[in-house]
Each structure stands twice: as structure tokens, then as C-alpha cells.
Length: 210
Image (cartoon, rainbow, N blue to C red; front, side, top):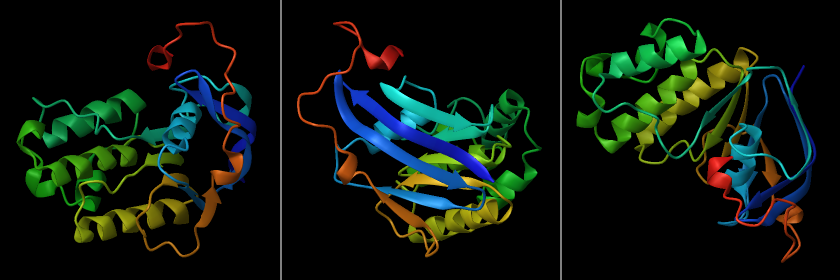
């Protein structure tokens, strides 16, 4: 089963094309690692797939409400506790109960702690735990292991492997070895846009408001 299909995708950053003619398919149970030098457009590709900005060209095919995005921000409400944050996101996505997410990301002992009182690594684990309460099969992950120690990286890798084993899929921008030897590599270098090529948006367009 194909979870995500991309054909001839072009994406832009700051009014200039970053990546173009990108095509790939992501099947159930598959992990695909995005690679390429800093600034090539990995984050821009993920944001475009997540619907946070429009594509310049090409098509993106996925089942409705099947994609979950985890970017650089953890998406936490500082005044809410760990459990309250997860309950909030579970309700937004009409997802499952939060108990499994707390357990899988080693957050049960922190359930009543306010998010603002967490360490950077704990906040990251909570941000990633949100994926488990979305109920969505395709995870779009932008450097998911930032701020995590080696034990937490291994913890998340286990969660990711279980997600794939249950028919999920993942597209991951990372330079860290997640212990997924079966994951395929998608190098964006061959898809780098030609220098100076602009998209067709009007002058003054700011993609942050897309």
C-alpha cells in the first residue's frame, strides 16, 4: 500500500526554488531518510508535504488526514502539564488515550509536571509523543532527535520501528543513525533547483503566512 506519492515536486524558500522534479513513493512499513547538505531544502520539502506552504509545482497524493508533522518546534503549551498537553493533541486529532504515549516515551513519571519545567530533552520527548496520539500513519519528521541523549534516541527508534511494523510510514530528515538499516536514503542533491530560478508567486509574498 502506498501511503504517500510525490511526483515532479518543486518547492521554494524565500521566493527561490530550492528543490525541483522530486518524485518518490512511500509505502506502508517503509522509512525514507532525507539527506543533503544544510540549506538544500529538506525542511522546505517536509513543510510542503505537511501542507504548511504550497508547492510550486508537482503533485502530492496521500489519504486525507493521514500525515503528521514534527518540526523543530515541539508544539507545547508551557502552562499545561505533560499529560494535559498530550490530551489536548489527542482531542485535536480525535486520537487514542495518552497512556501508551506516556509509557513509550518514558514520560509517565513526568505526567503532572508543567511543560515549562521540563529539560530540553524532556520537551523533545513530549513533542515526539504527540505523534502517538495523532492516530496518523505517515510521520514527517524534521531532525526528530535534536536535544535527545543516546538513550532517548534509542527509545524513539523503538517507537518508530513499532510504527512501521504496524503499517505506518515515515519520511525523516536526519543526520543521526536511528538504527534502521532497512531505511532507504533519498539524497536531495540531484534535485537541487537551478540557481536563480524563481517561483510564480507575486512580489512580496512571504511563505511564512502560507
